[in-house]
Image (tube, rainbow, N blue to C red):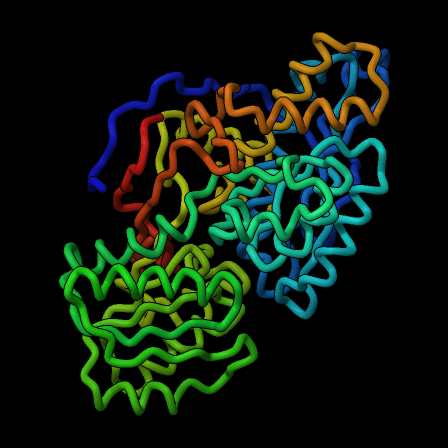
Amino acid sequence: MRYGKIGALAGAVVLVAAACSTGSSPAPSGAAPSGAAPSESAAASKGTLKIGVTLPLSGGAAADGQPTLKGAQLAVQQANAAGGIGGYQLEILPLDHAVNGKYNEQQGAQDMQTFVGDAAVVGVMGPYNSAVAKVQIPISNDAGLVQCSPANTNTGLTLPPDALAYRKNYPERINYIRVAATDAVQGPGMASYVYDKLGLKNLLIVDDVTTFGKGVADTFEAKFKELGGTVAQRVGAPPDTTDFNGIITNAKTKNPDGVYYGGVVTSGAGLLLKQMRQQGLNIPFTGPDGIVNGPGDAEGSLIGIAGKDNADGSWGTTAALGDFPGKADFDAAFKEAFGNDATFSSPGAYSGPAHACTTVMLTSLAEFLKANPDADMAAIREGVRAWATDPSHTFDTVLGPESFDANGDTAAPFLSFWEVDKAAKDGVGDWVFKEFLSFGKK
């Protein structure tokens, strides 16, 4: 592993700079509509093909899901503004699997059934949470429907033998890919950063006992101990925990110099941080991408729940590039498309990766239709899956060139590090990108 800024990536993507107007495709409450205004070419199109989006989009989960959705929407708007693909116009079909403000696996499974049953859906962007991916992949794999996650990190989703359990009927067919680095990167990467860069040696580790939270905390703990760190206490706190005071009181007797939280904000990360400060435990708070979920004025954000003063100086990771050569153009295009959204007008940590995932599927669609312009819907769906998952193919995305290995994992994983600055975003507090770590060549 190496730390520090990386030079300009080869093959930086030039974003379509045309203004992106919005249309009337279905979207959940609070989501911006997706399609660009019909152009002259649209009138003569073969019809509409859809990219499904599966994310938690409402309540406390909106801070994660809404900016990610908009990354996919922007890619589709840009494709439509350029005339569509192969005679087809594109449409985003977003489905919200949040229930009571938290991601819900059962709803995620139902949503995947909806995508599978719609012949016009040629690919799915998402999900955000690894636990949802576990129930969706068997459904999408059976149907031969490609899905690309911008944010899933659980290693077992792609790596045998665990991954084979999610594609029992078609074990050799890869349909699930991701641009995010796995927990085999995210946990150890943050452990090294915490130990070497932040100088923390004795940690309280709390996880939310979910697929993602426990998994990333396990890999973090193993690397932290390997480096010479000690674990003052390791505690599992289920996602419905609202009172962390007992954990905090007990941990204080062991004099930790920092905290690592394995989980997501909707499982209680913000409450844990707030209650720590209320008890006078003023030590660094760190965690994975599950805690890096937007500024202080975003509904359900860690900063908003804990308070910007309490969150100031917290550290988190995201399993993708936090900065990239085309970011200024991407941010400008995002702002132009969604500037009227009072809450989610700026990109989130996974907006760029969502755009990249969608670009992979749109590029695969374009390549397949070049050779098969008269293919029917079933053939198009299979063609997109086969092209997107072929390890020999490289895609030009907003993040730079992207490709996938034989398991569906990104061939060039990155880990970005973020810190809360209470003065950022006009004083409401926000996550500020600091640097990133490369685990491969781009």
